[in-house]
Length: 159
Image (cartoon, rainbow, N blue to C red; front, side, top):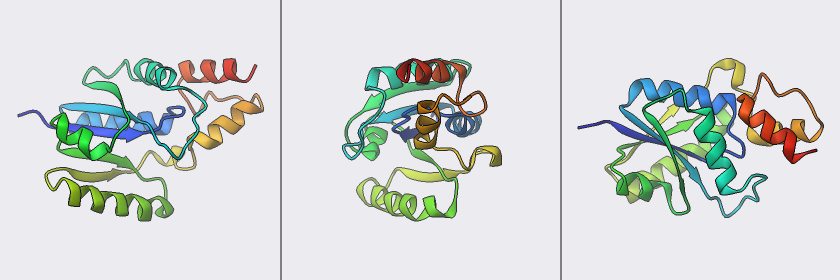
């Protein structure tokens, strides 16, 4: 039986920190599905198709990673697609409390789906998509923070 994990997020946009976590998850699982989750509480800069396209391009070097879009509960996506694990990235202790609550709720909803927490490389711990969007808005160099395909899309958005 294949070990299938999902890594959900809004990925608006996908960053090098996300890619780092996905690369390590791909070493641990046979299949990793990056799930671009539609969050009703967020107004994204990039639409679903743009986020999907960027993630596919940024992760093209990982043959066991695929990308999908989902608008429902992430735990339902995991259950419906045979994933037994949800991977979540934790950058700081402040992330843990929220993620811990979600993990416990997911366990209650689907006891067969576990959550694991992975930390990105320390050089990415301060990164998040909001900071990236703000840097892009002010035409800063994004080379160290996002894949080149994402930097190009951000530059186009803020021209």
